[in-house]
Length: 95
Image (cartoon, rainbow, N blue to C red; front, side, top):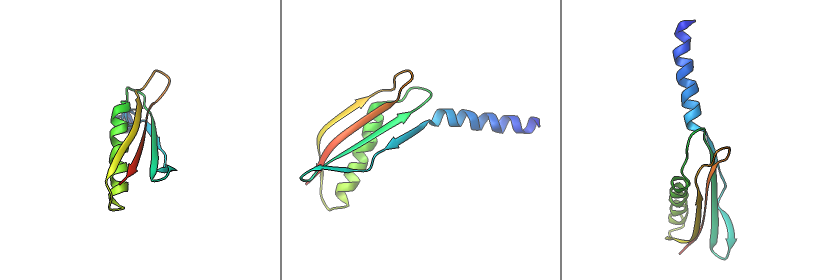
């Protein structure tokens, strides 16, 4: 029984630290313009800027897959608030 306590404690802490997130698919919002959004729920602090960086990485890969370059149109990031989540949104085009 005691040999199970440590592994279960480690699993509980890892789950609390990882939190969970939700990212939308890339959405076409206009002629050659797109939007991508993500929201993360964590038990501790989480950075909207870090989420935004990940979205830009996804957008670059999306455009590169079309043989184009990603151009940022706008972005927004909100850090984690007590009882809430951190989120970010970017709008971009592939050129």
